[in-house]
Image (cartoon, rainbow, N blue to C red; front, side, top):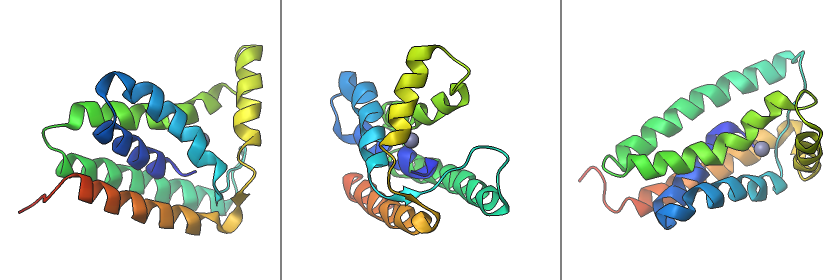
Length: 145
Ligand SMILES: [Zn+2]
């Protein structure tokens, strides 16, 4: 699933979970989300299509962070923890086939659960993102009043 959705979902976890549980729950939710059909990935070298997808995802991720900061100006710390741990598993990919064997075994599993990666899957990601934004907006109560 695209990074901006992991940021938004991790933020939701940060907003609703008891603080001590936020890191573990946000980390776990990442893999639950990856089971759903979503945008596909590639190993480098990336195609033109994937470079565009990565660019849009990076832009949307910055927007997601700003959106959450605007919604929860006084709870950004715990929500930031949720967003961080929600995205963290995707940074582990940088170590795929470069790190220890147990990590490869784990990442092979994390890859296997993403059976639903499709080239057109960004449409699913756009839909999830909308749902997450609406959820965050409602959780924030009546912001900007
Ligand atoms: Zn992932």
